[in-house]
Length: 68
Image (cartoon, rainbow, N blue to C red; front, side, top):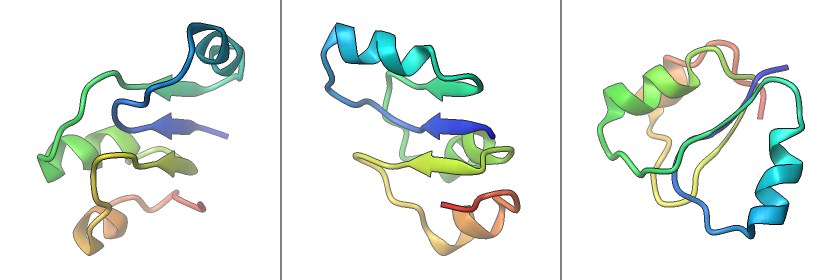
């Protein structure tokens, strides 16, 4: 399962370290409002989170593997 945290999230270093132990997780430290960037980040993800960005209908349509 591929998990993506698509944009900046304010978490403690200890918590981030625990998250990074999860296989197939990607955490992005920046916030992009460019739909092309967001689509590229989640195109193969089954689980994705959004903090400061929006998952528009177009973004979701282009994330065919997304379950959550």
